[in-house]
Length: 328
Image (cartoon, rainbow, N blue to C red; front, side):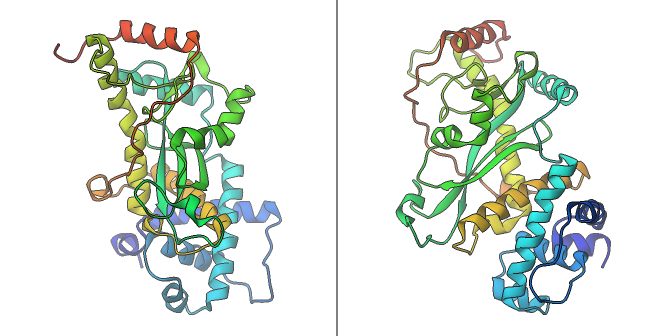
C-alpha cells in the first residue's frame, strides 16, 4: 500500500509514517521500552498502524480489533503502549514543545505580518465528546448538553501546537481550565520564557494578563482604536481554531472517544496532538478540513479578574500603535 492509497486509509502519507516510525524505533531503543503481558511481540509498524487507524476513524473498537486480527484486550494494550511511546518520543525530539528563542523570533515575525505585534501563540479550548464517565458524570456535561473533556492548546503561526493540556471536565470554562493547567503554573513560577516581552492571545473567555492579551468586550462604547484592535487580534487568533479543525479533521476519533477511562482519553488526545505536529513538520496536508469541522467555543463570559496595570498599559500601547484597518 503506497502513496494516495495509504493516505486515503490512514490520513497521513507513507513518508510521514516512515519518518514517525524511525523516531519511534530510536525512542524505543533508548528508553527501555519493553513489551507488557504474555502476548507474543508484535512489530512496532503494525502497532502504529493499529493506533493510527483507530485515531483517524470512527470505527468501533471491536471492529478495529477484528480488522487487524487481534483480540479487544490486545488492541487496548497496543493502543496504551504506543501512545505512551509517542509521548516518550516527544520528550526526546521536542516535537510539541514551547518555542525556544530562535523559533520565537520567527513566530513573532509571522504574527506581526498579520498585524499583531509580539505574539508567540494563540490559546483556546476545544471540547472532545466522550461517553458519560462512571463517576461525577454531571461535571462532564458541557454547555451544549453532552459529555466532554476539554483540550486546552496553544499553537503557533504554522498551526503547530506548542502546549497542550487535556482531560478537564467539559462543564469548566476555558479560563478555569487555564488556571488548573501546567502552563499557568509554569508562567506563574517563571519557569517559561516569553521572549522579547511577547505574549499569547486568546478570546474573551480568558482574563487579561501581560502575557495573555484578549480583546475588548463590546459594551457599545468602544473607540475606533479598540474596535480596530479586536479585528486585528481576531485575525491572528483564528490560527488556534484552524489548528483544532485540522486536528479533528485528521484524527476523527476525537469527534467521539468511546471509552470511559479518563486517563486513556487524555492520553489519546495528547498523542493525537503530537502526531498532528509530526504531520505538519512533514508538510502533510489535508484538504477541506477547515470547512468540514467547525470548532465549538464557549460563549464568552467576562472573567472576574482585575487585570494589573502593566497588562492594561501593554494592551493600550499596542492599541495606539496599530494602523487603523476598519472604517469608523
